[in-house]
Length: 449
Image (cartoon, rainbow, N blue to C red; front, side, top):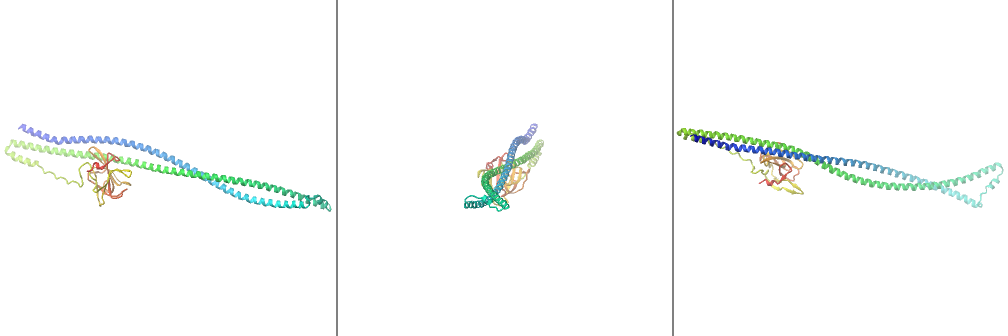
């Protein structure tokens, strides 16, 4: 009898252990994978921090370069302003020279007129001298005086005539000299004008060259500015995404811990139920051994009490399939993973023109980001921890989003509706799978049946 009871006890112990040991091993395995994932996450974060510092250095260099370009442009603007001022000065000098030239022309005409008049007067005087024999007999004029008063008058008249002749000759010589001087000045002014015009053309060419250099620098500044803005945006977006992904992975790890704890409790409850059943069976066996007549009835009763009705199986979620990942939407496969138009098409496209087409999570995980972007439109990013390995899935161009960042989702849970938002040419879902963090895309068909 004791041997039989001992055998029953051992059987109960073995049955209980078969339930407890796998659960303990599973928990230990899960904890080890979680610790490994934490270590990998820390290493990845360290690498990302290093990349961020490197990009910040590049950004600093871009800013320095932009400042230098701005300084060059400011210098060029000053040079252009100085050149324009010189051009204005030359133009003013040219106008002034033209005015002087006009004045000189008027003076020359007047001088020429006076010279012509004096030439005529002198010619008349010479003609008169020729008619009188070529000698002016001032003595005859003086000797012909009637009295002393007449003599004084005649002497005064002769003196005035002689002085007038001298003044005419002197004025004539001065006018001739003025004419020569004016002509020299006119030639000089004309030469200066030609020089000014040459300088003006040279300055214009220099200004044109400077303007071309300025435009070139401006284009460089624009390109550098665009690059700087893109670098800043990418850096900030990547930093924000890494923080969101780290938080999502932490939640995903916590979710898996909770699942492991739930499984442990369920296993413990199952083990306790199994122990109770086995104890009841052992008691029934003992009672049967001590009372053969009652053992049949008791055994029958024990057998019937241990056969608890099996719980009903839950209905499977719509469209949920096996494997690590399931198809995220119903539709037509229109574009695969690979190079397209010189760029990597990092996912697959599933088109469907029907209304209200659900988009579901391809696997259980935690939402990293649920937002709208210019390229992806309404998009959802989810991190997954499957068999100790991290994955990231992307669902783009959604019409609407029904989940938010940090939310845990189950496989097949609806995320939103298929749409045509962002840079999209028609209603479709753009779906990506990344091994690890985002920006490590692989062909989704590697995991989809």
